[in-house]
Length: 189
Image 1 (tube, helix red, strand yellow):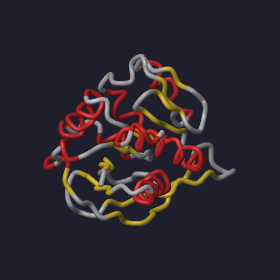
Image 2 (cartoon, rainbow, N blue to C red; image 1 turned 135 degrees about the vertical axis):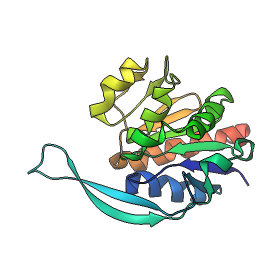
Image 3 (cartoon, rainbow, N blue to C red; image 1 turned 90 degrees about the vertical axis):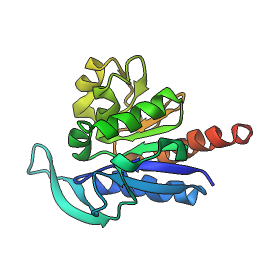
Image 4 (tube, rainbow, N blue to C red; image 1 turned 45 degrees about the vertical axis):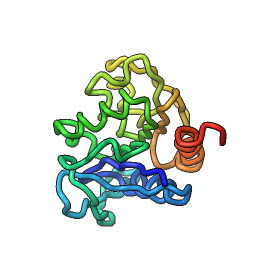
């Protein structure tokens, strides 16, 4: 059975995290959640409030962690998922997050980026020359990292699939599973 690694941390957006987490399982994949420690991750819910210029944040569910970043054996995994929220801001500074992310890009394995998740590979220069979607306010960051930002719910660039955020999940989920399935069974797509 193919296995995906979901790379995350506290303050990951709940829908950005849980939708792909369940979608890959629905598609017949195993998925391991990886964070700094084995402590459950505190997810958050981002809502758009007409009385606020930015989104507001509430505590969401807790997500159990299967393996800390420092113990991830990248050879065990067939795909990588990086959800959005605020987690990408801080997880990208960890050396093991860099090691893991660079492995998936160098190995041309499937990578799914949701919302702010694009911040992780962008900071390592891995989106240079690539097409990606992202949460619209970080478009300039992605362009400064050398990416071409496409304003669409399901951007596919080879092994890379991305979306703007949780409202894109129906289209993104289908595209993600097509990219993931093709990688383990090229004749199926």
